[in-house]
Image (cartoon, rainbow, N blue to C red; front, side, top):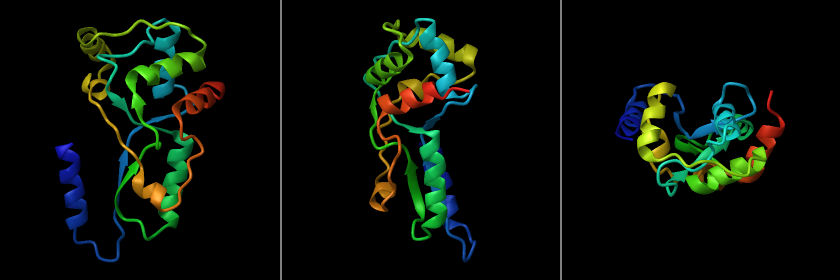
Length: 168
């Protein structure tokens, strides 16, 4: 978080006259493309590993790739928006609920939870940081909503059902 704030401060302080600066704060984006975040989670869910991760109470913020692309276009068209803008769906939810709805959309009734120590080992194999899953992030897109942007996929249950239906 500190690195992001430093980056944003540098962006806003940069001597670039006549240039609008927008710092897109991007949450994890889920779409139907193979190899993306939804595809990786789908494989885990299908193997029965789609339970909650860590304590399961941490908040998950997300955005559907369709809405992300539309929000970028919105920012390009609305020149009055500048500075930090949260690129996230308006309804974050707990990791436990996030995974429950994912399993529901994937038609997989159960998923083994993943305790924190096992998650740390798995993160080594996936070459990622367990903090990406364990840290609670409750991000809402206040500035996008205030500017009139309307999400096509505002809720996770409907978004993941759409993504899995459209998997390429």
